[in-house]
Length: 337
Ligand code: PEP
Ligand code: MN
Image (tube, rainbow, N blue to C red; front, side):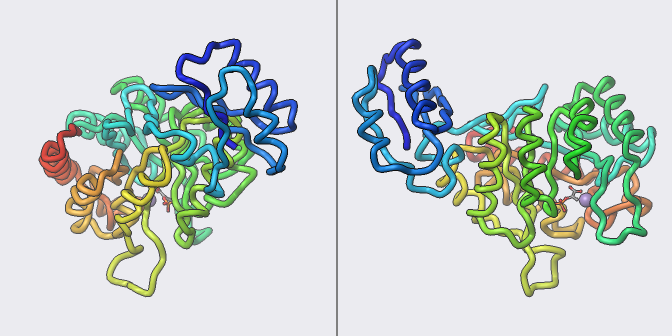
């Protein structure tokens, strides 16, 4: 249910209704809109709930939430959400660029990349310290050491750090270093992990599972939101299809579709979405054209020698060219990158 408060409803009236919602055994999420406040009352649907809440002080209306996801839904919050982490701003008109290597490899690699992507206009640095690899024999990431190197790069450049957390037991450690916790595609439906990053309260980049539907992605986001963490960015990173000319198939209709269904910002990952460096610049620009609120791009100073995903990484000049392309598209839409 959504308890829609009247325009100009007072703080005590809103507080009173939160208590009423909780007394009915439901969870209350207060969402402050520009026009009015709404309280999403989440929990098992009961027929008497509407009547019990509708006569409350300052209440304009009580309406059901039709979508299976609740707090993520546009029905609950009309205004787009902006997620911020230091200089990174994503959503509500802001387009944020997250760039960096697939994996943190060593000090020189991460610092060189950080300086270059910052100079070209990125506002966040990506880099995996804990790497989900298909084979147990592939490079698994520098772990704690990688997190320390990311913190060093942040100190020098002021870029926000986006890095993956793979396991519930690592959330505390990774949160000490990261400004944004990335939940990887393979973990999109790891519900314990989603709850843990929800509790951590840090901004989260939630990547779509390669075979997850839009509804499953939004319900995964709901796990994080339901813990009281509203700072969630959704990420389209490509899905598994019969097609093999690209590593994954990157469906850009996701972006306007999700904008229709949710207030959460949408980031696109054309690196994993295509799996080929030469396809990344055009798909990055196309993502901006489709309305993406952000991009996450793999960038490496020497892709040929990268320890992971070199074949889809941009080198430093290629990243600068991609930024120029994205800027031109954004400008045509009245946005800036
Ligand atoms: C990554 O960002 O390097 C990564 C492993 O992404 P995904 O979870 O989308 O495969
Ligand atoms: Mn990668």
